[in-house]
Image (tube, rainbow, N blue to C red):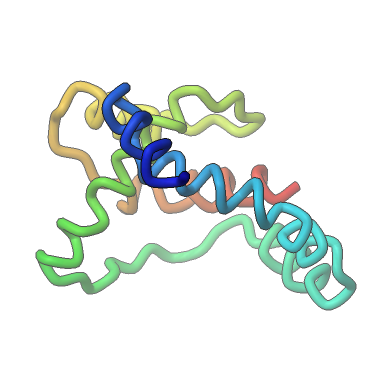
Length: 125
């Protein structure tokens, strides 16, 4: 039953990874919500949201690992273009536009690290 459905979706051009991610969120949203609202999580979230500035440090990453992450980062950056955010994220938007235009892009840089943090906090609120 599932196999013919997946074949049909693939033939119609649906991205299987995106569909899988949507399924996971749909199937697990109650657990995720519980975790976010649990008393143990609140101090962690408060600490995370209380950080306003921090130093950037380049994350060591092999070229093969960078290549594996590229598609996920590409999809995330494209999603950013549709976000309505409270905080300005011009550097992330610039990288997202580069990804959309099939130009080289980097998601975590000295220019974007604080914007990513602000976006994460906004998404968790």
